[in-house]
Image (cartoon, rainbow over all chains, first blue to last red; front, side, top):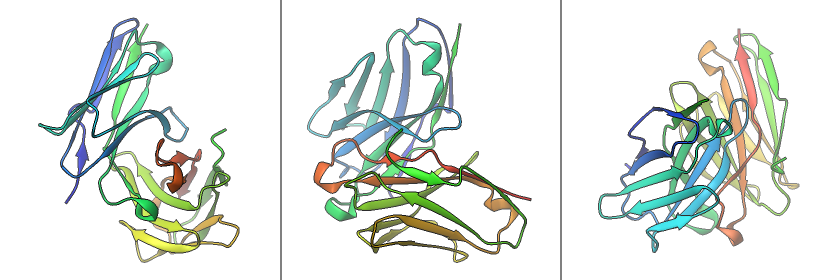
Length: 115
Length: 114
């Protein structure tokens, strides 16, 4: 069945460095991808999304890259800050649209930023 | 505040008991999703409702049930609770007319079964 997984369960970086979090997906029909950030004790929050007709999208300090050939998604965080410490989830929508819209989530990567 | 409200925030109960978790979706969102999150399982999809109707089921146990009411709030009922049911339970809502942005999550209910 469809699955979304993360290559690295934990990532530790120094403050000010760039972070890259990776995600593999298996459903080639997925047309929409999202990165969520979950801080301790809170629900996941939307960071950035990308549609399958794009290969790159930039936000504020974040960039999402999509490689459909190898079914790979990555989240790049520039100048990582202590407030970026959280669990990051990728999610894909590959199971229909409209009222059947359902996201499939990866297991998450814990990002720790060291001061 | 995400606009999705979950109550209670914390719940401690004994094995064998029954609890009800409540979710009010963001204004305008017709769809509600329930997820269970434990340390080693990530976000596990339980069930989806759209405008009062069940639309999809995931890894939801038979001891668990849910419903969405006419005012669009949803309740997740967990019965015959076991220690392994201890987890964070998240509700999320979505607006299909605005696919962008995916789900909006509530802050969750932390259930501890003792």
